[in-house]
Structure formats: structure tokens, C-alpha cells
Image (cartoon, one colour):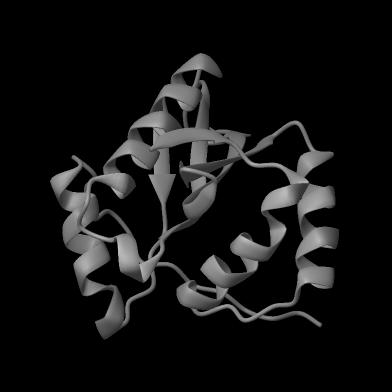
Length: 143
């Protein structure tokens, strides 16, 4: 198992992972998204590769605080294939995400996780990794 930077070749497996996360998409749409993400230096995508098969991913975005000095990294997407969960893959992905955040000079790493029943295990995982439940999120479509 190795953690590596995602490439365009990973798109079909990223589609499957996005679907498992609850966000159905297509290969064509994911290619467009991935190309946009890759062209923005604030973003970084890592995958867990098990002998050539992508079995997890973490999508990261760096930003600058308004309320503090310094910068942060936000985990904007995180998923491990349902057949590979509870094998330490998520932990490795999070650790590599934190390492990337430190290399960016960030002082904090944050994430939002849906407040739904099916995310309860994920919440326990984040707590076990040292993350604190700090806020409630809100969203609104504007299109």
C-alpha cells in the first residue's frame, strides 16, 4: 500500500470513490473537475494505491485565515473504498495529508463531515485521529 499523488489515469476509480461518498458523477465530469483541480496550486489530491488499484483518496485545499495569522489546509474530500475500510488506509491518507499541510507551512488542518447517520463511523475515526468537533456547517445553492 502506498500513498501517492493522483493522476488523470486514476479518474475511473475516483468516480467510484465519489459515488461511495454519496456524490454520483461520470468519468467525463470527473476529468473536467480533476483538470480544474490540478491546474490550481492550492489543491492537492492523494490516493491510496494497493498494487495498482486506487482504494482511497483525500482531496486537499490550502487557504489563508482571516481570523488568525497563517494558513490552513482543508480536507475537502476523503474516502476509502468500502471493501478496504478498517485496514489502516484512512489513517495513512490522513497522516500524509497532515504531512503535506505542514510542508505548505500551514498551522491547522480542518474538515467538514456531513451530519448524517451514515457518517457516524467517520466522525469516530476523525476523533481517534486527534480532530475535534468544533463547528456546524451551513450551505446554500446559489444557482
